[in-house]
Length: 188
Image (cartoon, rainbow, N blue to C red; front, side):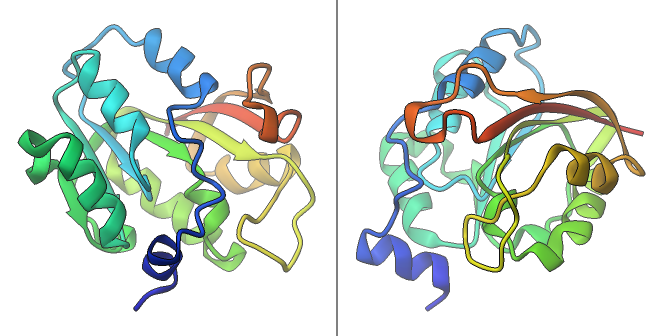
């Protein structure tokens, strides 16, 4: 059994906020094109997915390596079962207009970060955006979650993305207050 599936089976899901977090809700509330093709990688229980669907976005997909959270989403939204992909993100072959980042990046071993950037860029249509939250605390060998800094993210993403926004999240949920950066990166 993989690491993430085991965590779900044991109920060790401290990252799970139980609902969409405020920064992502506020960002989604500003989106006007309901036809956007959206991906949420490593979505866990997929509260962002639910929120998007409930707000008229129908072209939304989730990919996760763990099956349990996908089953949880399927129970809530059975009509969208075909939008739930049980697979390794790095093997996905598709394109999207928007990819929402919420705790997926910080869960990956740091040595996969360059591969993450490259894969994200390849999954986005021209002018496509990668948006969401990145942790803003020192990177250590312990994790997940693994931290990082604004400087590190600029250096890591600048080759493949235009940095549209990368600022301290002003509306983080309490446990993540002053530990998150909200970002919008547009693929070059």
